[in-house]
Image (cartoon, rainbow, N blue to C red; front, side, top):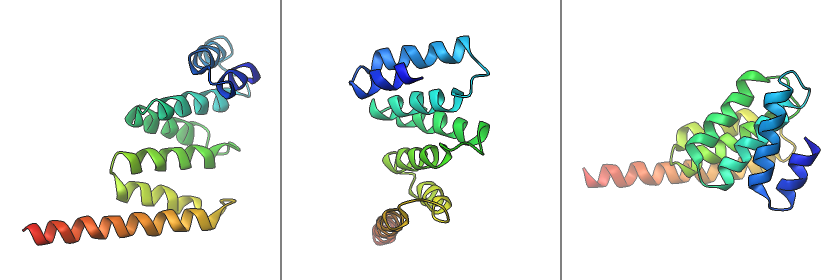
Length: 129
């Protein structure tokens, strides 16, 4: 996993992807499976494949609910949902982070911004009707 993360840090995302996939295939019971899956989700996000990334983050959340990486996966999925315009779902994921997240103020600001955006969309929709 260190090799995959090193490639990722160097900007060699294709090689990072290969290394993470090799880890998943060869060592399916490794203690680093959650990290490998999170890296795959991160790469999809960086490539702008928000739907695929959101699903991959969701996999990490569902398969590894006690992982130390769960907050990163939830934050990643929330960012994907935000990018896809699924504001209510993004707000729900951001809200789920609040009780334990290390940067709660940042999350509160994101939630407030999305709620304002959502209200703006609703107001515009009502005006157009």
